[in-house]
Image (cartoon, rainbow, N blue to C red):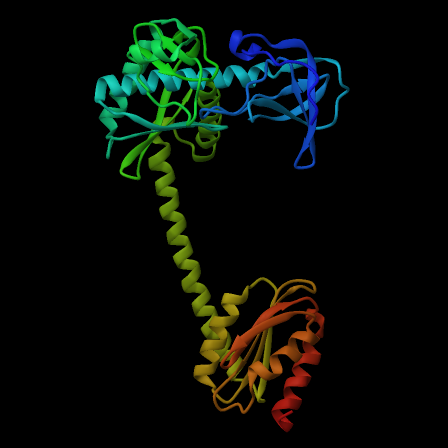
Length: 404
């Protein structure tokens, strides 16, 4: 990787988080995991870090797949190579503003959780659909979630200004900063993000200009883990989208269940109980049918018995086989199920049948165009040529008669 020009000390994404495009110079090029990348003299694209995902956008119209800081240089991983020299880098603003809303919301949530409840944030994750923080509280109950959410809403409505600045290490040490966590080996200035009258914290991410731009924040759930609690939440446009999705889903459920929103859970619970009862009835009926089928089979003459059900499955064949083995332990049984050519088969040999199912089973499977396995007196599997059932029965009769 060859360098041809100096890189900005403070990049445009930090100088002005609302800037969406920039004309700049290609400083260096290279390849990473089979993908080309460029380093630019300046950029509006934020590299992944501090819990915030990397921005997306384009460089001279070529899609940016990832942005990472490596050895102090910001690599823009591209879908295709771009020419050297002067280029235009453009930001996917909707993705960026979403990240700004979520990240600023995290600062407010973390500050309020600490000030109101004494919960310190130990981790932050900004996901594609929801975000979460981990706090050092072993348990968070429903009432505390409601109180925390309302306290966050108060700070959002206060429209507190959000600003970022860099200070010297000496200034940093003299300030009351919430987080004292700096990257290992950090030297030089320290970047601080301040929410007026609420929070002062070290952070390298992008943020809204005011807490009002967060719009709203909704806590989704609290999950105990690693001795602390994970709080999941969404903010801003994500919250509006989530509400919209829930509204559409509820409308569909109302139409399906013929119930109001307040009645949906009770109506669905009732339907599920009806379904469970119906499934129990089906199982009872299938068991009765399996027993009746086994009785009908054992009433036939001959050592080798066979039957086929177009609309049954392997568990039904197993029930029939168990009952047949009980009623007639000296019989050999070939059962199949399925439509057209594809289906399942089961070979069963009773204790007195004088036939080893696991030995002859592979030959039956080959005739039926399938494969299977088994142990003891059962061999079963899938079939791809059910029309060859007659040949399989003939083989079994031959083996039962001559032992080969």
